[in-house]
Image (cartoon, rainbow, N blue to C red; front, side, top):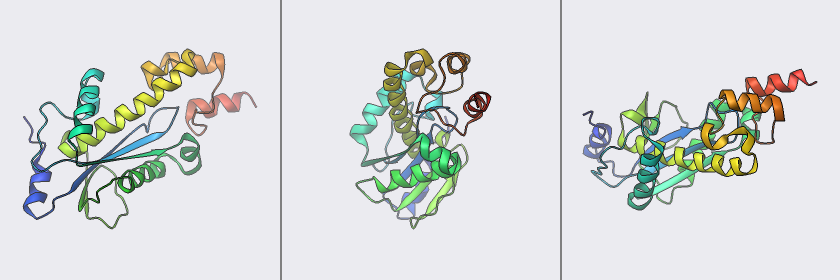
Length: 204
């Protein structure tokens, strides 16, 4: 078993107490916002089975989401819309969502562990490649962000069931791409993304 608390333990030994793990979800989909979460866990926290949200079943993610909601010292969520993604690009929008997540915490962290990205912040930080599989705090953030965004797409599916958002969560599956060809695009589609911009170009 990989020790997912190694980064946090090292920081606790250095005197940091409120360690915020940050992750995002939704860089690849053609629809909807990018969502980031920042989670501060209690000291020496353990939650067996918690890891990168991509490796967990939907049922497990939902279960961990509820537990983390109860147990975390603080949770901040950042949401950046598809319009803003089209305006500033997904990389910048992801950073913006992460900054929003930090800002929306009720408790200010004294250290940040960030999945892959570098952030401009006055808080000391370490970015970790594949951090959601190496740090418990980042794994917690990945679950919170994933469930938050998935629920948004499930709501959108009720309005537009033909795109199958409840199953594809906005990613470019065969069914989703066929629905774009058949029904066109909706306001929530990202205009700057290949399949959507190609659809628009073809219809000019």
